[in-house]
Image: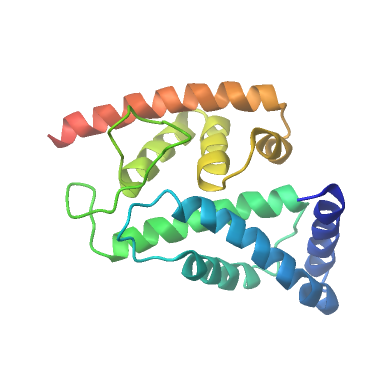
Length: 194
């Protein structure tokens, strides 16, 4: 997204927060494209046979965001962070509603290609990853946010740095440490389950 588009989105979000109805009408196409970008990053990591499509995830997130009209949006980065978190929750709820539980079932596995959170050849299920991410948040909230924004939100290190108000180098260090921590935590979870 260009700098002017980013500024336009921020301006429209602020205007919408202040109750400007016309801002919402202009914001909808921009929001929808941002949501599609985030949703695509989630869905592209899914294995074949996944029944949740990008459009369905976008539509569900869109409906939930429209109900968030009282949010005091700070900027584009705040919107992206909330959207990424919202989509993660939708996917977790979807996985749980399909009857998949922590200790078994035919859970669809997600691929963590870029993130390599766990060792090669081992794809964690979404519920297990969510639990490990919650445990990480209890230890280090920022590292958990980095994973959420980069992996679930599909953001670059620069975009993540903007959201969190830190440098891209800090994001990359947090990313590396978080991956290591999550790999250890998920191996521990696997031992407990077996």
